[in-house]
Image (cartoon, rainbow, N blue to C red; front, side, top):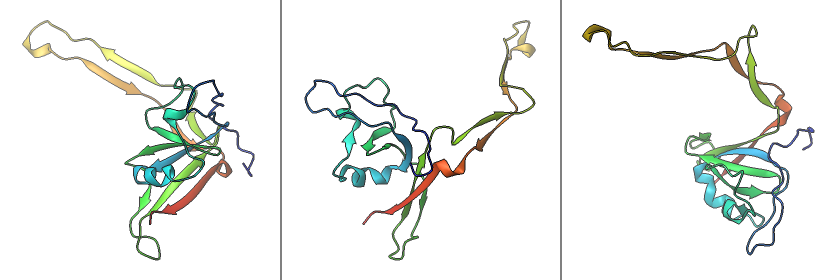
Length: 153
């Protein structure tokens, strides 16, 4: 927020339902699955099953803390034995809207190529499916990407 990054996730408004809580406009946070139990121990953690609406909940989203909505994966960033005590260090990556994106090169966007199978004989029983594109993923504004490192005791 100190770098004026725009939030990505919209507010989940409160509803008159038992055990639910609204969420703030939020940044995405990419985290490792090993962080899940620590996230649940945060006093202000709101689990996705306590969101008033499940309409915009992604399958890898586990919940929200303050202005961060956490998405976990076993492929999350971890540096083994990197702490002074020899514990693993987990990189939790906070991203704001338009902090990264895809840039199309030479005004060329993705193209899907498909050639259906030919049934003219045993030597021509094949088809083609391919994708051709000239674009690159790029960090657009690195001040809107923040790294929070944590260990699990």
